[in-house]
Length: 171
Image (cartoon, rainbow, N blue to C red; front, side):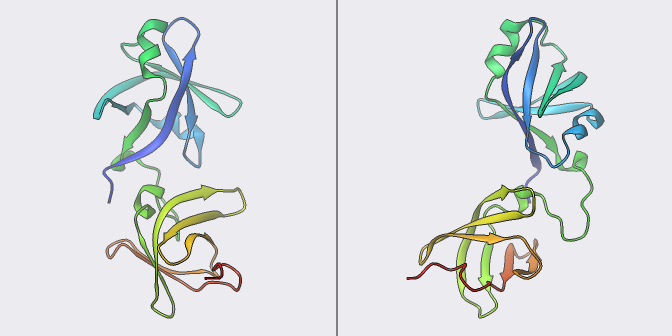
């Protein structure tokens, strides 16, 4: 399992005093108010920065990070990804998983055919959709619904699925 969970991407600077606009990649953008610090992926290494204050504007989060006090200091952070340590992640409900734990997971049908691995998770609003990269079928889109997802085993890194008719492309 991943140690760090991605929570956002810095998209731009905001104003002149070092604030940054963050596109949240978490189910609840208000979670930034609960954080004391974020980890920034900066040229391949993680660096912790304390959060001084958080504001929200439309779908964006505006952060003021400690030690970033001018726009010139914030500019190099644009396009940086923000993470939190797993221990600071939001608690999950039943049948909920962190996307980081699903990426790379092997997907197997109820007939024991290996379809491939999860490459991405699309969040559509109604339900998530797992994008599976398959050598045999190409890209397969599997809705994250109880009719399709039979079991998720984080320890074995495997997902058991029962595909509805039409989900597999013709070979």
